[in-house]
Image (spheres, rainbow, N blue to C red):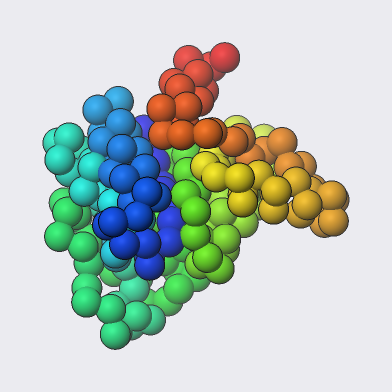
Length: 178
């Protein structure tokens, strides 16, 4: 399964969230998943590092036209897809995958999570199965609950995991059709 992973671009390698990202990437690759990230630094690099170190396929979906000041794609990618616009980048990242996982992040990560959540919401209208959306971190738990209430949407479409191992178990359960 191709899995999109969203997360902060500003997390430093010395921070605990970075280690969580590395572990998530490693576990995804060991479980046979290809990993798709935004391709830059921070948690995107952490996930890419873990997946690459475990021998996985690691695709970075970047936008060099939107982010000309960034140092470029992280060194752990096995493939790079360059999209001309930010919205194109987000949709390319989500459209190429069968599941999405959000790690802690800022407005960019929130946007990615919202697009994945919206896709899961509208899937019911087209008869297509909803793409799983998983979020790690208490911040997402509180925000999704509040958004579910205030914008009258189905907060149950976002599943929460306490750590990378729990996220992998959720994917396994979904893959088995449970």
